[in-house]
Image (cartoon, rainbow, N blue to C red; front, side, top):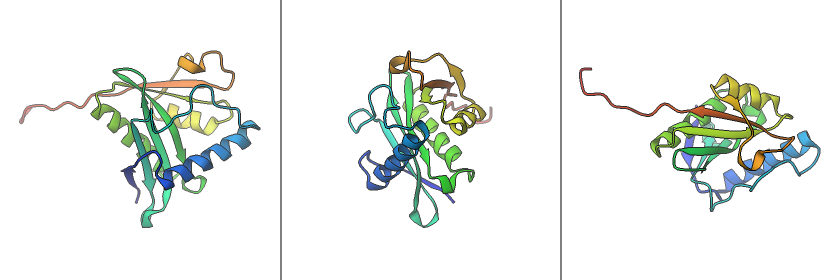
Length: 160
């Protein structure tokens, strides 16, 4: 059973998960210079979620950074390797999408990289479509960008 909680950016569990993600990406890319653009921070992250396994063990995280009135960027999506394939990533992604819809954001964008084929497969499976590089990723050889238009929450009158 996975529980997903909104936490502050500087939450210790979130900080540890982001450090683990950074170490994994440094290994995949062979250096620590693999992030075009401004790294996310407490000043520009609107939503930060932490996924917890039974017993409260932190196993994943993800964030949203608003780009404009209707668009946000998915940042720092990460699941501990031991928890991959268990549904944690999908649950976390859906919770981030729900948070975006609640803020009336209709589009989510993200950047990943060619050394992350597992992430590329995951996002494509979850309905994200490849788009041209956007914003700070334009011209980057280490970037692959995706987007998903979110379904707005609608309520219908009773009985319809």
